[in-house]
Every structure is written in C-alpha cells, then in structure tokens.
Length: 435
Image (cartoon, rainbow, N blue to C red):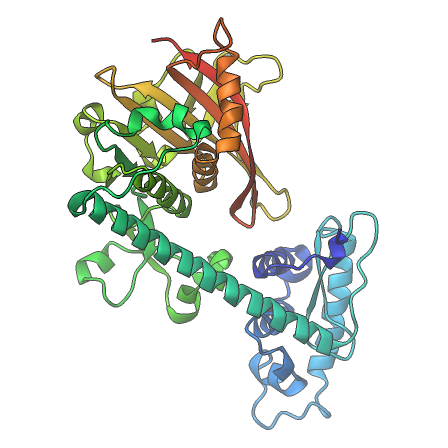
C-alpha cells in the first residue's frame, strides 16, 4: 500500500488547493503576492517550471522593464520570502486540514505540491529538479488519460452507430444465448419480443460559444469571467477562448456514463441477435414508450421519475432517492456523497425499475443514476452475471416461496466514485411491485 504522501496528485487537486490559498485571508488582500504564486503555479502546470527565474517573474508579475536587473532589485527574492511565510501561516490556520500542501522551496521558484498525512507533517523536497520531473510525469499521465478517454468516447459512438445500422439494414447475426445469470432479467426484451426502444437523455446546458455560432446564438450568450471558473483551467476552451461566453443547448449533449453504458447494452442485444432502436429523449413521446418495450436511461435528464412513481417503494425526484418505507438498516433518503475537501463525488446511487407497460407482455425498464456515474455503474451491474445472481436471490427472498422472482420490482444500487469514474458497485435494497 502507498502512504498518502506517495499518492499522485491530480492537476485538478493542485488547482483546487491553489484556489483555496488565493481566496484565504493571507493572500486575498495581497494581489501582487497572489499574482506571484498563481503565475509560478500556472507556469509549472503548463510545463514551464524549468523556465522560472527572477527575471521572468520580475517582468511578468511586477511589471519591471526589459532592463530589470535582479542583482540590483531584489523584489522577487523579497516577495518569495513573504510568500513562503504566508504559506506557512496559511497551513497553520485556515489550511491546517488541507490534504494537499503547496511549498516554494528556498532558492527556487517552482512550487511543490505534496500530500499531507492526517497525523504527520508533509516533508517537501528542496530540489526543484525533482518537482519538475514529477510535473512532467503528471502532464504525461494527464495527456495519456485524456487521449484514452477521447478514444473510448469515439469508440462508444461508433459501436452504437454500427449497432443501430445493423438493426435497421442488416440481417440478424448468429445468435448466442445470454448466461443464465442475465437471461432471467433481460428475457422480456429478447427475441421473439420486438426490438426494444433505448432512450438516452438530452442534457439542457450552457455550452461554450465559439466563432462558428450565429449572431443570434451569440446574442443569447451569458458571459462569465474566466477567474470565476477555475475548474475549467484544464480544458482546451480555457486556453483557446479569449472570453467565456456560454449559450443554451438542449439538443447536442448526453452524459459519459450513459454513452459508455449504452454500448454495453447494444453489444449484449447484438450478441443474442436482437435488434434495437436508439433514440434521444427529446424525440420520444409518452405514446411511443407505452407502445414498446422501452429502456430509459439517465435519471433527472430523461423521462421524469414522477411519471413512474410507485407508492410501494423508492421515489427518484429532485436529485435524491427517497425511501417511503425504510426497512431495518435502510435510510429514508439516499443522496450522493462528496469529499469534504475537494468536493469531488465519492458515492453515487442509481434506481432500477422493472415496470409493466400498457400491455402486460411489454416492459418499461428505467436505469436512473443520480449522476452519470450511477447510471454507468447500474448498467455494468445489470450486464454482470455474478452480480445479477445476487439481485435474483434478493428478489426471490421477497416472494412467499423464496423461489419466484417478482414480475415487477425496484432495485437500489450504489457505487463508489474515484476521479469521476465509477468503482465498486453493490446492491442496497430491493422492493417487489404488485402486479
């Protein structure tokens, strides 16, 4: 196991700690010192830490001219000493509970970020060369992560498009059967049943405007100062857009978790020779849902949970899951959990509902994560034979004979989340719904 101090620190964590420092009482009233610390940090984040020196800081931060001579004008050294003193005071007071610590080693101008163990004080390296090497590794890791993430998203859309086309134009592929651990759940959606309608959510949001937008679109924009959105500093938009103007969009975006999850669903149906129809939620009406086997993804961003409220179990509304009749060991309300320091999502929940449609031979399946990570984890759970064996057993325990799975039911799932990616998922509770 690694000690806390040995764990790598993400760029987001570094920026968040820098933001907290600059907003503290020790720096908020000292604009030049804040600018100094922010400048050397940003240069380090961008890979320019090895170029930091007194001359560059004097010119860029303190507006010294090209004739600036650091030997005659010690402004940079004096201010660096003050910044080290203020950082020390910050971590003795406001930042005493911070898990990430920032230090500017004596004789250097490359800030060093380290983790603070709960019981011990972090020792920062004094050699800037090591910090630069670590930062280069961090940037390389970040670049690889972003490239892999982009490749996964492209692959997801290609697989979905391929499955859709095969469902429309190609003959049914050689079919296999689902594992027994999955077939009991998915049987209503499999041949000879009609192809299910899979609905992915459209997210209404504000996106960054760009030069390709029409004048009318730009006129509806909302400008937000870049400094007010430090979370965006790792994005290409922050570096390339001079201004942050955001415009409404209700047609163009869905979520990462649902996108990855729908690939798994489409692949599963293709493997058993079942066609499917994939549609965005804004183009689907309630009549279409009632007339088909339908699978709805996306929680608050898809069809409202109020349409499918059931007084016997769990309600999903307003970003929380309420438990109308808590059983021993259960909560009355299930809400996402966040890290108290970084505010990153640490636990999400999802609700799975297998419900009757207008005709008894058809089903409506809702897979609703509170956040997109919950939706992705729920789909992974529902396509995992071993986990589904656990769900089947829990549902059979609800029946009088302990052998029969209720026709209609609810399942509450949870997942840990690390770096916005779902981790360990498990079953929380189940409810049978009367026919």
